[in-house]
Image (cartoon, rainbow, N blue to C red; front, top):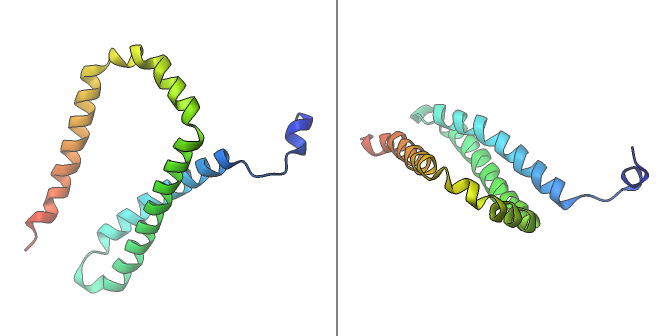
Length: 116
């Protein structure tokens, strides 16, 4: 271990933003699944609990994502600019991925419109 790493006592904002982003993302999955299963009439209290957990994790995820992008803007901008030629080779794949994922999400979500 270097002396510089051993002496560091402050909190790294970049590392903190990344860890909050990761932890909030982890909470989104089980709370979303639990929210789905607790969405029947007899589970109003559980539904509210899981909805609160899911919304809180979503808000933290969004805030951490914005902070992460702001703190890493220079690095991300350089990376994208350096790779723009590489990405252009995958235009069709990108279009298929965006349309496919968006279409699938909207199709699955449309079941909510069919409830009486």
